[in-house]
Length: 347
Image (cartoon, rainbow, N blue to C red; front, side, top):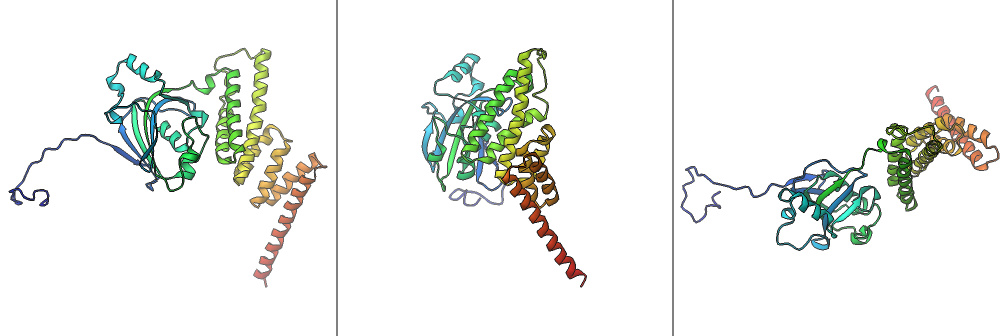
């Protein structure tokens, strides 16, 4: 304080009054509590957040190590948080902003942005302006598919500090899944299956699993079976669509098992295959991954039972026999180890 008044007459034993004006207030959030992803809210928004199925309208500026590499903001002398504030715009002006050719319009479930940017947009509300600064390149930026305006795998490298400045202007939320007609439900689920398959092909098994889990949730929670629109369930078209949905359900559950096995989540495999076997008791792929996962988590008796059942279904399959032999050998080894322990205890 003495330094503040240096060179001015002031008696430090007296009180003084200082008038201050708050120019701006910025909310700062440390998303992972390690300073690797810092979000700053420059302008608050209003309304509901975007869903995974929402379409969003936004502007974005991307800086890497302090250098701008992309921006779709118009030239302006105003700071970004002061630009195109919907609170100061008429309805007609807001519509014109959303129709601007430079505005990015994106369906969130296309997965064509880095995962951290996807999460950031889902956390925002309309008319909100934020920044996100991160150095988590591999796990948060080198993710998902590329877009026509950003190739995150080429734009960012390990050691970079990346800053996103984002203004969210619009959110189009789709209706709830269960409210769609059966044919649209089938189309939406097939799209999710395709997206999951694309993640699987590039070796991103964790992301593929998440997409399959989203699809499977619609089955598990009754959204697929819910005939909200009261469609005529006696028509051939409706019945055929529901048959296709039931077939797709089994496919999505089975593909999820493969993803979970790839990332060594063996207990998840065991749980999911139980659901599959309830639907299709003789499902060979489910029995195979179930039995293999059981012996990998040392549930040897369960593995032997599962693989014995599988070999009975397809006795000519040498691969299945080899897995059963492996489970039997591992069980025998466990018994020998137990016998050694017990023999030492009772000497």
